Image (cartoon, rainbow, N blue to C red; front, side, top):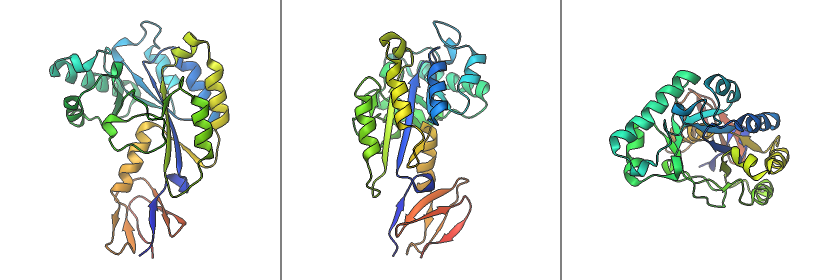
Length: 266
């Protein structure tokens, strides 16, 4: 029986993803940095607050977030664990509908506003079309999440960002999959006068051949596509029922299983 391991696209074993909340005007500068260094971001937006309190207008947001992911953050940013379920449903579902109308694709993720969530909220999210939700508690580690609805980042950008980046870049054991997940608010760089931190980070970690640069939902979709693969009992062949390719390490050979294909592995 062949030894088979999931890899990221093109056989990579590391992924970087960035997660920023609230849709504030400083996202213009941050997204520009990401674009220059080939880094992907997920931006969690309150659809009821466009153009208010230093937030981008709809027209600005469409341009700024092109090539990145726009994700839900509720309509008005309430502390949702304190809200009745009727308001919770409206805040998330109406946020999705507005963002989807503006950006033209299905919004399937979110970050919890004010970091507020509960077991009951997590149970409700799949019924509202939400497949992942980011929390604010961090791990300091580079593992893959075991609960997409309680997705814990590696670090906030103000918590040893460059130390984590250097550790991440140095990881080289290909028997593991590593993810570095950074979160924050772009306006914090203005408040703390430390834009040089994220500039240094992007210059250091961008453009590397062994890192997959992905949005939050791209990671979710890829892992789920791997989980949908249909292997024969002997693992001699595999069928990919998804539309997207999945890459495997088969006896240390990198193999692409294209969407819709059935492929012999041994």
